[in-house]
Image (cartoon, rainbow, N blue to C red; front, side, top):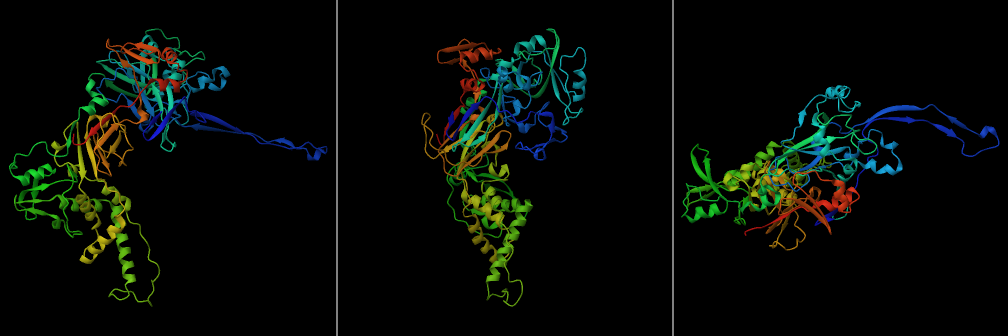
Length: 629
């Protein structure tokens, strides 16, 4: 399958060279003559003593690090209607589901006809509805080890590996056999419920290969569902059945949970598509004029339409007044003003409006903010100072007639030491890196909840920000003028954004790694997507606020999910049931039910996990915004 920037393929499994756990390595040396000779003096066959070493391959066993998890679906805490989708987890490391095995006997002892069992995952997703009895506790590993040796225990005896401590905390589930038996997948189903995705870029180079594990049970409509990623290490017999260790229907079976999350299927409007379609779309400005502004005044109205707002301003003399402020994110094109640069103080960038009797501090605030951001970053400020000093020394060394020239007969005429210019820091600053949020959005009403606000970047504001940062270490007028030339020479190729948008929504927290495409032309809903513009990496400003910048002025924006988070869904029928159809094969399932994965795979003619995943995918949705419409 492919997406606009590349392609991806499904693979059954990715076997690691060695499984996790303790291993013994034995080495022996044997020297033998290569050719037989009549003379016994040239015959040599001798073995030396063997050496055995114990090694431990460290790997997750009782818990998962957050960095091992790419995404969870449905999103934790989600309220959307996901009752037609199989919950799943996407893992960043492709070998993780096969770094251990679920068999009581080692996979090496399996016969050739059972080779498929070596690709069965030791991890499974179990989905429980809110009313089902599940006991969750967090004992230390010591207690789990002792529990496995009790006579009435229904957890297999475990061996503590060298990389583990008896005091390690873990999460365990205790579920009655009668309940867990109805939702626990068989070994054949486990084989179908995990796979790997090779995601490739436009050059067909693998950029990621996440592993995916699916649950075999649909969430319950209008209720909460809790999903646990449990370990099934050494829990299955050779015939593919789960070993309940002689437990009765009302006896509890214990599992180790490596990760869990909860969501509810309550509101259809809380799905990915409906959340985006329900966003309040506009440009970045106040939805209505402040009370203290005169709406009839054209100057004030123009300032408000350009995204500026009146804020309290304390002057140098201590007086309090109101002044206009506007950030770098404007509702439309910049004003095209010409400001003096470089400047030596922020006061040089204050602009007084005699009609309103008010001062605009927008560019002065940007200049002063640039200075503060540079001073806060010790590495960047020291690098800039050393670079400037090096430039000054080099300029004076070349001046043979000035008052500060260095005569030829004096020492230290060699090549001056060079210092690198902090170009990366300035490039990040040009993309508004580290700029406080209240400088970008001075009033919360500009960006209400569940809204998207489009803007164009004011290039003058960015120039003032950079000029303020560059001014550090310059005192005299001569130094300021040299700064202007040096800055233009060093930063002339820095890429600056021209437009973008701010998104404040549950989508940001619930669906990480949103894919965003921007286009210079206005596209209709059914128009094919042309090659997208270069996009600066979207930046998450808070849990539910995201900023995206483009290097061109865009008029159409598409937001969608990457192929790594394709979902596995069923079609909702009018009677409330769900179905999956491939060709002439029709498979029906009731809400909240456990899916017979083997039968479904047979109906879909998918005998491998890769083919099953391809048949079950529900393509990532795409929502299009046309700016100004």
